[in-house]
Figure 1 (cartoon, rainbow, N blue to C red):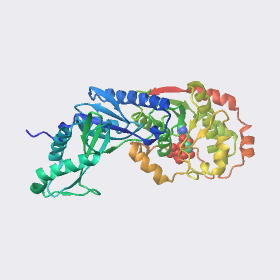
Figure 2: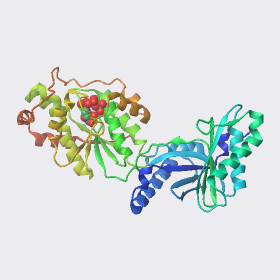
Figure 3: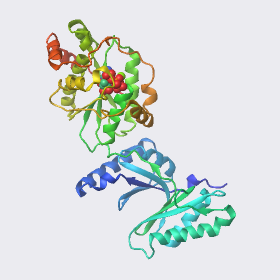
Figure 4: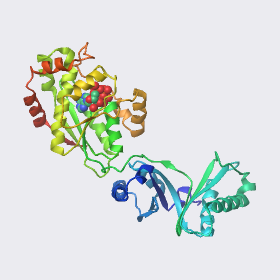
Length: 398
Ligand code: ATP
Ligand code: MG
């Protein structure tokens, strides 16, 4: 039986983002170590067997017989810019030619165009250009006439790449985009207000991408919402945690309906959403204290909802002093947010029909005056309400 191209590979080239390289040596080492730990966690979690991960001049190389599966998993690890299933060999030119011919033989079809590129580190007797020329010529000699091949350096049908690292070399074709960002766990924790909607999932993911573990908190506003809303938030958390393999998979669920009822009963209806969210922020602040987190993340974007005008965002932020409110989507259009939601696997879940909030007033204030909101809050026992929220917290494993 003919071997499929998938079975040829015995390794994966792992490339990091350029940003890692501008870090000082010790920071970079720390980031690299964390990245390697995250890689090991993912491979273990998905039961992808491998023999070794080696570090060679700005790259990691994974030795594995399941290179295609491994590459697919690795592409979803933060801090990795791209991956390529590859064939490992020595840096002897004859060996490089041999492996390149093997891969080319499997990939090239009739009338294809192709290109060879090479990157080289170390003292070899040949240059990168030599590798491209010699490998390219051998491919033409062997398959050129039979398949009607031509060389196209700009837009080839098949690209062959060679990476030489001292006395080792790796031959590959596909370059699969990675998640980018920074290794997960290289920044401090943040509390993420996760509603289950499209925006907050993307907001949390964006800070996760930059290395922050997120402690997700969901405010259950029953009886103004129903269990479908809660269920959706738990499912979104589950999808997000797939990007954080090896880290705790817990979401904090706060019973917030009683507080919302108090707000409706005691304060002007124009302010319901602002007051509700200010209570959420305050509870998140306490949770941040408890969890050793250093910020609060929300999915707000300028003007996306009545409560999210730039004026109202100021009113919201005013509710907490101890931690900054981070709003990664601040300048995003809805379409931009949705594109990311699709890419990260939360869109389908977040778009699921869920019971909306029955407490939303018909005429919410879009230009609330901070003093008026603070005055309205005087009718509430804030301290007691926050206490009640904290006591109601259920930790749900997903
Ligand atoms: P999303 O799409 O994230 O639900 P949204 O555009 O519908 O956001 P709002 O409902 O005004 O806007 O919420 C703004 C932000 O407040 C959300 O992105 C989220 O971070 C937080 N938030 C709102 N409701 C909840 C909730 N029930 N539990 C946790 N966080 C919430
Ligand atoms: Mg929403």
